[in-house]
Image 1 (cartoon, rainbow, N blue to C red):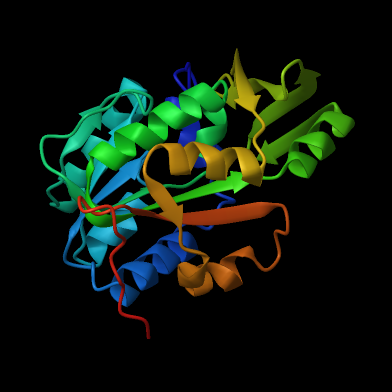
Image 2 (spheres, rainbow, N blue to C red):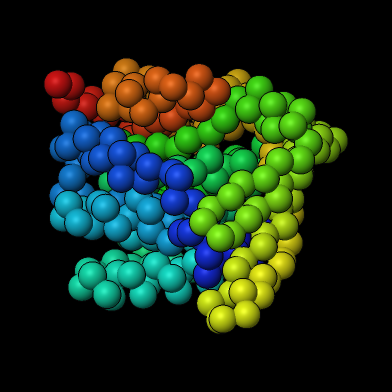
Length: 261
């Protein structure tokens, strides 16, 4: 899982088009709905803190986990600058363990597609299950196959962010996967306007709803589609994007009953 090592210093510049504040607000609404705004929360794939920082601003106790040390360094600098306290974990979403259980774990940014296959997806669910309190919730976003199909049909396309450019290349791989490569051209800060070029490739696994549900149930979760109202507006204009909410089975094999508003 090589994720954003080279891009890390420029990540926020290239991802400025994502409305992290709105997504974080939806997560916060969910926490309030489930009376967990004062609980222990874990952000998987925290990156540079697009969701984590806004939640800290709202007084939520949220920790972050990421595979890329470079991203965690950026996030740690932001947290220190803002005067917050957060436990940052350099770990792998396929094999992580936590010292104490969390009330809610979320994994946004479609991070689960960086997993290689359903076996690794199941590993992630097992780790999340072990790291949650009984009755705790796991929230994560994912994309339907049509999203990746559209990307691969484009083949090559570029994005322009200020003076910086990203050339993207997408192609279909075997075993329901896609390869997304980018070549970044970063404008230097000196007077000579020299651009730096670097390239990274990410293999993204494509899952369908049935695969996700089967893997989740094998790890001890059940789906809670009745709790998704907080995310309806967020998903309204993206029909190929989903946010799945899972609930951990209690130790007695039963499921907790959330208070509904």
